[in-house]
Image: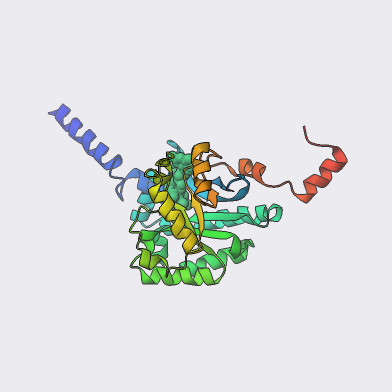
Length: 289
Ligand code: C2E
Ligand code: MG
Ligand code: MG
Ligand code: MG
């Protein structure tokens, strides 16, 4: 009997902990405190111009430096943060941290674009647009250099969310549709959204194999972007062949392991142009060795 009880308890704990990520689970309780306890980190993945591969910007990607489990990827805690109502606070931290960092970087590279992911739940908060503008003002990061990434699902049939994006767009912030092609892709709707950038989902990039069939969706999405005069970015570019084909299809920018993984800030800085001060120092002292 004892053994059976222990087994049942073990199973119950497993059910609660692993797939459930339930609101009352230990992980949820830890996540509630993670922001205040300074456990979140941002990595930055370069976004490059095609075909030359020059740095155009970066996407901020959140990680949770969990005290026992190590560095957790967003799939392990962003959905949980949405469910337990912590995503607003998490998203505010991400925006503030990314803006603070990018305000420094834009001194070395005034055209640097910084992409930040926004959860649909953040757009439910009617104070969201005001919050973003306040953060930009406090950190000194230029609105024209911020790109907010949203998914189609966050805005289709959500007039209040679209209205917030319109406010942000009018302030000069750029809006990108993330994972484009995987959602509803309501084409009639797209033309009316305040959108500046299409991010081609990496699933379609993976299908690029040099045949017209493999590249059909990528080609259609990129063509749509051209017709609507949108900036196009391919996600998940892992090979030179993919980069070449995307260039032929007229894609403007690319992001993926072929160029760089998501990087800690100090590594992203090596991608930035040398600033005037360090060039001056190099003239006096000679190049760093
Ligand atoms: P996403 O916005 O589509 O971000 C791109 C994801 O693809 C990142 O995963 C990135 O590491 C990964 N990736 C980049 N290049 C390649 C490649 O060449 N091959 C492959 N296989 N993968 C590549 P990550 O960092 O695990 O983020 C996953 C998702 O979590 C993001 O997808 C985004 O939807 C969400 N996310 C990340 N940071 C935040 C955040 O600050 N707030 C919110 N709300 N969501 C976030
Ligand atoms: Mg990942
Ligand atoms: Mg994204
Ligand atoms: Mg994406």
